[in-house]
Every structure is written in structure tokens, then in C-alpha cells.
Image (cartoon, rainbow, N blue to C red; front, side):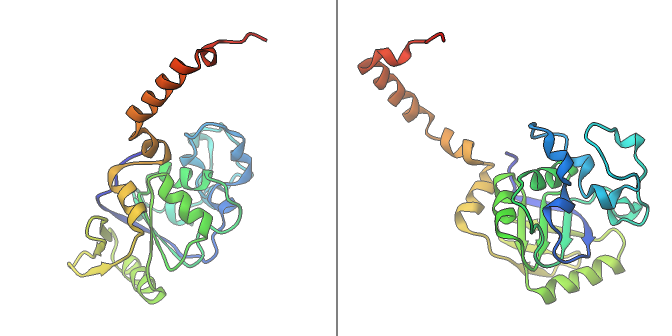
Length: 217
């Protein structure tokens, strides 16, 4: 998992409340068992005019919706998503943070997130930041007013730095912060103890060698 320390990026506004995971990545794209390739279908039903979208169709063959925020030239290359309350509600599909991360977003800012989506973000290298609704509304105003609006997200200091230098503090659970700063997902956390695991396996096979047998059905 990619480490998250300090990230500066263009901000894109998702000005809708209660954005659910089926809007983030529609159900037909869940057929894939791979963890890659979901970025082109992020917000598919809003992003394209040819519906319903289907897995495997190249972006070059789709008809983009020019009115959708991510298709507007001023937000191309955005890596910070600004959202309204209860972002990521609905089903628990982990494909939603996969699609967001694979599109190119590193951080999400909203007044609130759905619990399962919130947890899945941390497990996939995304930083979801909860700020007061009034603060988020002010950020929306500034994003709309200033094309090319960028923020710096400093996870080490737990602050967002605005273009004029003003800092907005935020809180992240200490364990989640540790994992993001060090790029550790659940597998990475386990592999920190690879020497102890290898020693345990060696001892187990020394005392119970029959466990090493391969059985052919």
C-alpha cells in the first residue's frame, strides 16, 4: 500500500449528499475479481451518457457527460475529493475505495462518511478526513471561486493547509494514522512479524512433519 505523509493536490467538488457506493462504482462492475481497473468506471452513471456502462468497454468508446464535475477541464487531474455528508453510504463493497484510489484520488474531505466505507478507505491507502459542515461548505465556496484550487494535506501534523497558508486541523485515529504513514495494509501489518511466523512454521514442521505432506485427491 502506498504511504501517505504529505499530499498536495487539486480539489474536485462532489456537491451531493448521501452519495452511495452504487453511484461510486455501479453493481455491474463488481463482476471482476481483480483489484485493478476500476478507475475508468468511477461514478459511471453520472460520468457517461451511454448507459448502462459495461465492464471491459474502453474509455475511448464511451460518451462523457460534459456537465459532470470530473469531466470538466478545470478539475482534470484532481487528487482530493471534497464531498457532502454521509459519503459512501449503501452497500459495503470494497470496490468503491478501489475505484476512487485508482482514479487518482488520495484524500477525501466531508462532514461525515458511512462507517464501512470509512474503514475501507484506510485499508486501501485513502485518507478520509472529517471536518465540520461549516468548514466543508466554506471549502466548497473557495473551490468554486478559484479555478485550480489546491490543498496540502499533512497527515504527520494532521492539518490541511489552504493556498493562503491557513491551517485546518483534523483528527485521525492513531493506529490508522500509523498504518497510512507507513503504507501498511492488513497484510503488511502481518508481514512485520514474518521472522516469528517462519520460526513458528519451522518448529511446527519439526515436531509434526506429517503436516508437510501433499495429499493428492
